[in-house]
Length: 76
Picture 1 (cartoon, rainbow, N blue to C red):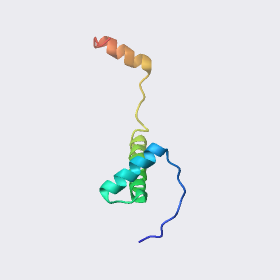
Picture 2: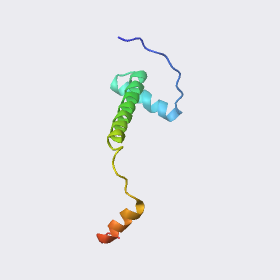
Picture 3: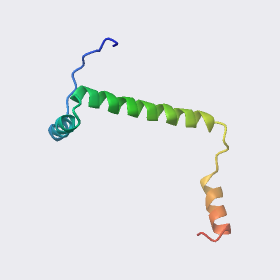
């Protein structure tokens, strides 16, 4: 197991209670729940960055062009 790092995190009281209840119901530690949530958020961020990178060369449409197209298609 890798060496764990200790950090102080301050939670809103109601959020802390919800985490404690979830930890008790799932048999996991509060630290385990927080680590899992942070990992998931970072993974989502990595996915977003990959999509942004893939779309960096896409041609942007102007708002005016989008409105014109919507009118042409009878959507406005």
